[in-house]
Structures are given as structure tokens and as C-alpha cells.
Amino acid sequence: MAKILIAEDEPDIRDLISFTLQFAGHDVVAVGNGAEALEAAPGVMPDLILMDVRMPRMTGYEACAAMKLDERIKHIPVVFLSAKGQDAEIQNGLEAGASEYLLKPFAPDELTQRVSELLSMYGK
Image (cartoon, rainbow, N blue to C red; front, top):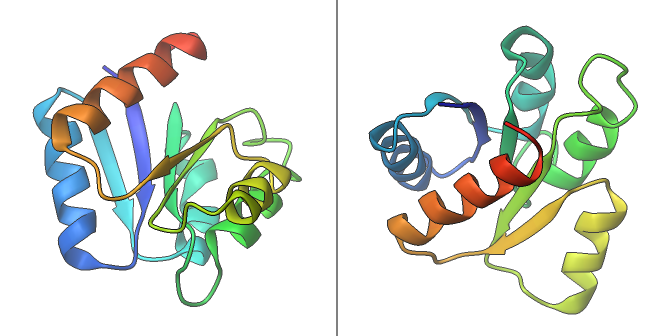
């Protein structure tokens, strides 16, 4: 299946997302914040990046904006996962370069289905 990079600072949520996507057959690399995601992405070269918005060291917005400036990884779709669903938050995510904004909480099968749709949409 696909290679997916996950950036989530809450270990329980990170583990749940990782397990859910691995169970669906994906190759998952998980990191704890935006800075680690920015550092890992060029080496991992994932098909999709799932990133929390509010994280220490570097927010998801900051990491996404930096990724979109890096020629090696700017083509990789970034999807934000956040409990913050206000229009302004979603707009900030899209302006930072995200392809999609998914709201927490979500059921594992919902996440798996949405990831499959996104991968299809981006030709993976």
C-alpha cells in the first residue's frame, strides 16, 4: 500500500493512527512534532503526510509551510488532523499548503476510508 508519515504529539493518538493505518496495510512512520516531520520527510519520502496542528517545537502549519518550500517534498500531500474545526483554523491550514483538513475525533474506519480516498485522488 502507501507509505504514510504521521506527526502527532499525543502518544496515544499517534499509536492509534499508526495501528489503524498499519492494519489497513500501509507502511507508517510516526514522529512526535512538526520539526521531526520536516526532518524525516525527505528521507522517508511518504505518499501522504498526516499532521496534527498544535504540536511543540513546530506547529503543523509551520511544518507544512516549510515542506512546501522544499523542492524534494513539496509535492507530497499534507493532511491536517485537528480538533479545531473553526473556519479560520481550516483556512490557515489550507493557506499553509495542506490538501485536506480532517476533524478529530474520527472512527478508525473513517480514517482508513478517507486516507484511501486521498491516496486515490493523488494517484497513489
